[in-house]
Length: 120
Image (cartoon, rainbow, N blue to C red; front, side, top):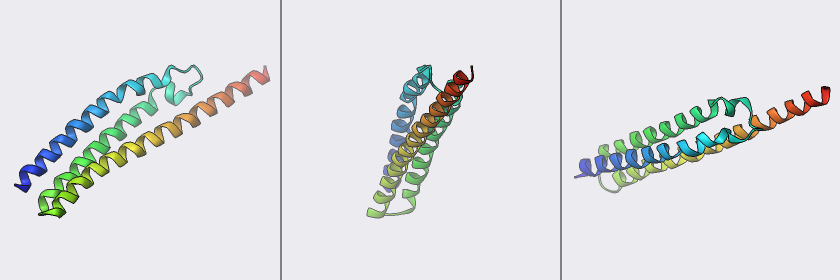
């Protein structure tokens, strides 16, 4: 029975995480709409890294949840929940890094534009 519940947990995690990653394409695609954005945002480097981070967090969560089959009882439930925790933690880390680096990219690009316009 634990094996069936583990696989249901893994499939649910992959389904929910996959849909979240798919819907994350929308804000990532809109990230470079600001004309002040830097080159990393403009050329999609940060968007690809963000999507890679989201996909990696889904796979990490599924991998952790899969190891619940090695345990029994409440330990298996805890390991399955740890898989969901790994996914959510990966999402939080990925989005934090994305927005921090994109803010830095925009600030550096703005500073370069100001420096270039003051030289003219």
